Amino acid sequence: MNLQQLCQNANIIVKRVGAFIKHEAASFDRGRVELKGFNNLVSYVDKEAEKQLVEALRELFPEAGFITEEETDNTRGERFNWIIDPLDGTTNFTHGLPLYSVSVALLDGDEVVLGIVYEINKDECFYATKGHGAFLNDSPIQVSAAEGLKDSLIATGFPYYEFGLTQQYLQVLGAFMGKSHGVRRLGSAALDLAYVAVGRFEGFFEFNLNAWDVAGGAIIVQEAGGHVSKFTAGGDYVFGREIVASNGKIHHEMLDTIAEHWKEQLP
Image (cartoon, rainbow, N blue to C red):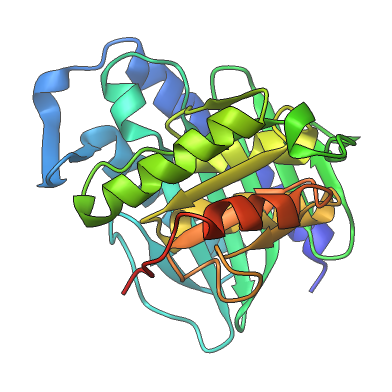
């Protein structure tokens, strides 16, 4: 299997689905939004976009299974599995805030070997394959060269369900605010990770995440020269529900800052 060629073909599919989402955004009806759970929105656009992705990726790579947010198809493959978030940033989308993305990753066993994050409204396609570097619209990208947290801009996501750890999170947030250039919240973890990869952010941390939120962006950060982990130095950040991504140079400083205030672990 030629991963680079597979990635190029998957990019075409992702961009096509992105064009569908952009078209639907122009006439989106907020009355057609559903609640999967408290503050967990899903629209007909999410569902149709995922259906299009699953059908096209199945045709592209028939032996791969799927791990999908909207559960269009969660038939697991023996070795390969696509991890799909058809619209990362649904709440932004439903409110007309133009910060959302399509995120796709390919899992080989338990290792992510391909990742794509497509920022629809800026037509920015971030992608990477294992061992071949990271790219933005076919140009190589690298993480920021900032040496310390004091020179860094950090991204995060605010809790929107399971609020039991909110107070600890706010303490961590306050610590980062006092140690960095600032903290931003875009509302799309996939974009946060892509922005770390291209050097717009130096770091990103968040908890209560799912594999489809982070898998595509995480490998792009790594292939751009950055580092990714859980809130402790190791662990499974794809399925472990918490993630820290950085340019590598500030990673330990980020972990130390989190450890000062984060005492509970997610179940």
